[in-house]
Length: 611
Image 1 (tube, rainbow, N blue to C red):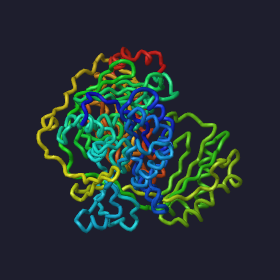
Image 2 (cartoon, rainbow, N blue to C red):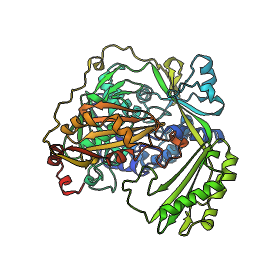
Image 3 (cartoon, rainbow, N blue to C red):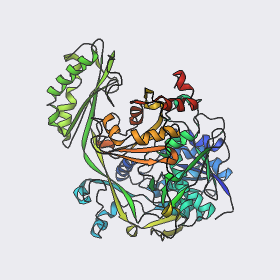
Image 4 (cartoon, rainbow, N blue to C red):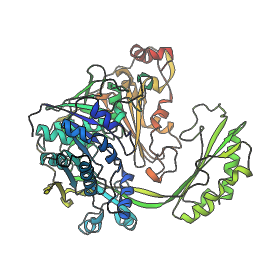
């Protein structure tokens, strides 16, 4: 533990493939203490596991090395500590590569790498099953034995303690595998401020901070409903959190960078990929309905009031398994009656490919018309559409011999004004990776931290529950504020709300935020699960859940069975639900004119039709 009362943590990546210049810009843009980055997603682990099986020196995010080459000398000089989950399924190999890079840069004696081990349980699955861990699918209840022979990866979501231990042991570069996205941000706080393992409220604050910055620029104006308010997308500023010892923090970005940090950009990120207001992490349960947000100057949002509760008794396992094959084909169709032509082409194609019923799953859509959702303007006739056909099946040969070979021949054998895409042509068959979420007892884990020649085991046991703010916490009660002038008008939901959406398996989360308290009161009465279910008719095939988060003027909707199976299993154009929020905001609703006037007083641009 140090004597610092404030630290600055900078995020420089929200996924594998994010902006490769972000790390350098975060390090050079202003003073920071920690640089954190996130590379891993569920499907990524399966890809890395395949790489490691082909080559024992692989299995980690190689992009990490390119970013380190840019910033490692400066970080060493400035005393900036680097934390990442780039280790994937092979943290020791990642460590070796980092140490080789440090030697190449003349920094071998100044770089001390820490490695977190124990999240990867792929090689222990049979042992775990025999020991009583059934690793049943959390969504379906099926035992893992149903897919054991096709298993590709299995990783436990670890929390912040092993990362904090690596810092305590003197590491200035920490490499982990599948720790939670929030752990890399929470760990420096535990290390610097000495927070106890049962200091639930402060731990919750750290989890909340990590959730806000884990997706990079999504907290600083990226993917933001009110995109027209973002001054510039050039050199987008990645998020920083300035954290105080008491757990309060400010979300901001470096001066002079693109983007925007406001209560609404932060609120949208908070409701992204969440379920109920009780956000469960390995370290604690963070109450998202306790958070207070306050604009604290230009591009600064102060976050306080976090309430937390005891950590869960079990941890989540993210496993993946081989689940057949899929392929996509696309043809561009243009000119008069493009939609009618596309329908004829699709009919001819499926007739030649054996029919849609020949395959386990098959879809047809016209991109620019119904690719992700029903058309917003049913009267508009497009001048061109991109016809997409897709299939999934366990039989690879069937897809290659019946489906893939029949697409390009439609160009010469059907309607005029048709061509294939220059970079695609014949559809390519790829393997499908299924997602398998499960729970595991903490006692089954063997978590270790290695720094240099020193290795220490870390207990995974949940701390004693003890006291916690969450036990007696009651969310603030919304007020009855909805105006009633007797006058009615029709508006798009976007004029009243903001929203953001994301995926968890086959469930899409759509978080909706009211633009003012009066709108939130209206949402409680009218924005019901039934309304959302109707709007997503034909898209959402399961139930819709609604969770209220009144402190953020927000509601979170979970649309079950809405992503075509999710991940690489899906044949949908938007398999991650990224567009679902915008589609919901396009809904027309009839409201009291007084409600619109409440919004217009805060957002005069809506009066001018500029939003």
